[in-house]
Image 1 (cartoon, helix red, strand yellow):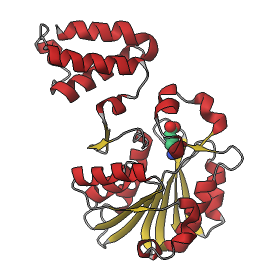
Image 2 (cartoon, protein in one colour):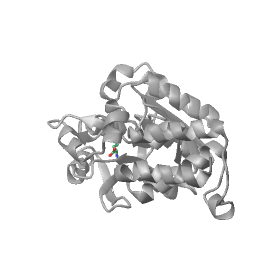
Image 3 (cartoon, rainbow, N blue to C red):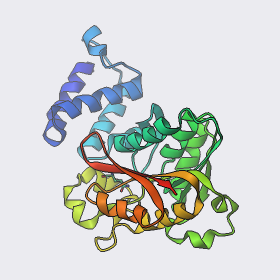
Length: 289
Ligand code: GLN
């Protein structure tokens, strides 16, 4: 079948759900991922034919897109900080906002000459600690998560990407029980976290491909206690950061001031609230007094 015919079928079937531009982008991502074809291929070879086996693969992806399965789950991989991370239904798909958080750390520490110890709390796919480990020359990086299924994905990414992150199974909400875990008793230079922060009341704003396919465990918090993970992370960081150590948090855009107050109440100084590329309050940094 002609590749351009398949592209037309994609538009005919999917434009109503996603819009023309996003369908174009899905189509090109898929032909690159599965067939190693670059996006300008149709400009060079408009009559390019793909074989039967390839047709099966691309039409399977089309039927999954119709069910609003995220493209990253279809391909099994997501691009983050110029690296390809394996993802599945047990982990959050890495978001561009989280890249901005990682870049903030790298901007602050790129020229650091001392060895850094770093902890990522609620690591999911491991995208945060692995990309920090790959981009910092001398860092000892740890990641923890409550989900053993997520930790399997993180470990696999660590292996596939040749990183050297150590992953631990632990619950952010009961770290006081982890006093025997020596890795969690040490002091860190950087603590970072993108914990669950979406309130049930915000579900209405979310797309069904997120609600139906990504892990609720990584996303949602109760309306009446939306900062429960932040209190735990801030308390832990206040105890376990070195003097002048830094805490970096991805946050709920509607709770910037409230999250800032948690840090103010816990011995952090120079607290900075930062917007993401969409203009929403999305990140906070605090320095330990
Ligand atoms: N930013 C993610 C979303 O809106 C949520 C991430 C999180 O809860 N930590 O889907």
